[in-house]
Length: 271
Length: 282
Image 1 (cartoon, chains in turn brown, orange):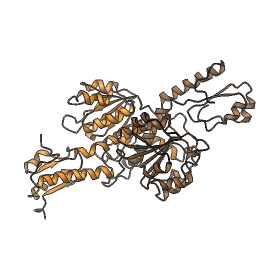
Image 2 (tube, rainbow over the protein chains, first blue to last red):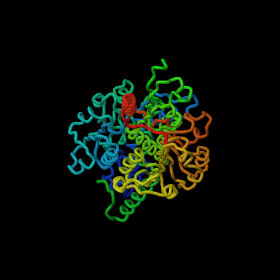
Image 3 (spheres, each protein chain N blue to C red):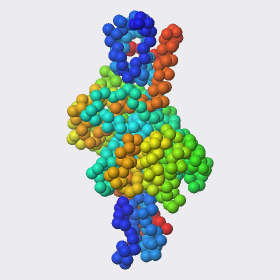
Image 4 (spheres, rainbow over the protein chains, first blue to last red):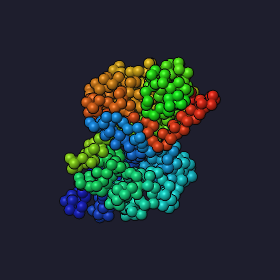
């Protein structure tokens, strides 16, 4: 299964009586009905760990690009109308700023490791607190209440998985708790953010900017306001899009499929 | 009015300091530069008028290192191209075969390991990058160990092994066109060249050829020669090039700190005290 296609529904499962396993590319499984699959005795696997570093790298790339206005800058540098570079054109300093990570799983933690080297102050919000060694290794401070993280962060990065609990986790209320100078970065799933509330917040300068690798849907309709806002960077869900990682994902998927077909324990099985 | 001027703060290399200007300001004692590069100044000429000079070396390092990392990541992951695909009216489906190259675990070759180069090494280490560096002088062993950097006495060894080549030298007669046809041909065809130093450190014509022929994979340039480039320059049209308008230190925090450094130097010079970052003609 690649990029969530084909769509797995009752009809499809009924038409494939000998289907034993679905191997899904990537770590997210929010596009799949686990109960439905198990009712047809079809096993499921994903590729959880191999995507982590690339996704963390992209989170950092988006955060750096947004803070320094890289995309706008490039447009200015290549535009046929540019005669000179204005002396008062500024971005925001990333080094030493405060990063709030919402979702400190494998990917969130790798973002923290990277951000620490930029001397960023790191806050995090997670279902469970990480242990002391893990926290001190990256200098991360736990915020039991997401509000505390939102109040203090210059950058808010979302790296949760999509579940009923994280659906629209960031809405109007949360955006209003953020600093007006803050940037929202989303590398999880579009539905974790209330997109309409985000558009309003960006238009009304409730927050400064957003950088999104994921939206709902993907791609957005071509007339969507997010595509027109100057303070938004959107990338086409390329979190794991490197040659090496895609190859590793494929290898993982084949391993899982082979195990599933021969009745052996399945690596990366999702239960 | 011109007799009253004792100090000058250069913002973005303006005004241009030439003989005429220096002659018209008889009481000028000090020129402070907003940034670290001094290649736009004729140091001997200024000194011959008895005018002291200062740059701002400390305030620039973090923001310039951040710019270097931003360009490295944006180029590797094809961020600018990706953004255009995501927002363009032509896109009806996601490009499932849109791929970039990995940063984590890749080899970074830093040419010029001064303050800025070292801060880049600190950042790159967190991405588990393997770090090679080439510098006029070798750094202390402890400094090398802290960032896991390996010294390459010969720049060729660095060029042959690096997936990302980051140029962070100051512009001097020795570093002019440091990276030319020969150096680019030594690089891997999958490698990316990132320049955050000065446009003239790279042979721009050779770069165009190298990018068009696939000799190197891509380039990301915060600096060019001139700035901005003429609007019909080939570099502006290549898909595998990101150009940014000399963002190096253009942040609110950095510009404030640079100005503070400049003011410290100016006050010291006017009071006959040692200047924190005086630049002497060498």
